[in-house]
Image (cartoon, rainbow, N blue to C red; front, side, top):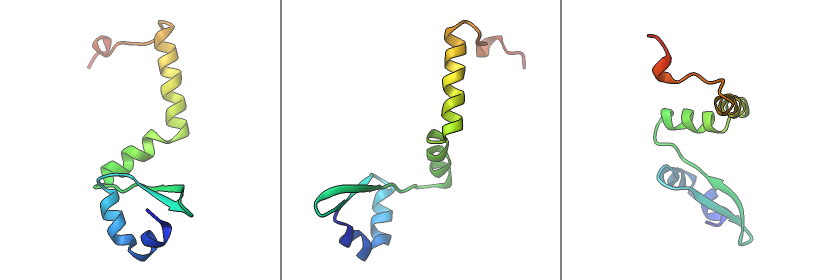
Length: 78
């Protein structure tokens, strides 16, 4: 979608972006992506999935698990 069209009707494109990513172009070349969210939960999940500290901790936990230092959920007491 050309940048000029998005700028002219941003509200419309934000609504569309809640269902699918919209690639924004500048001079016919990809320049960015508009991502919408249907709910605050969607926004939270997106932020969590892209948060560097969260991603680092997940990678460390996976490594610990592969090295046999993990704990299975079944082994946790309630």
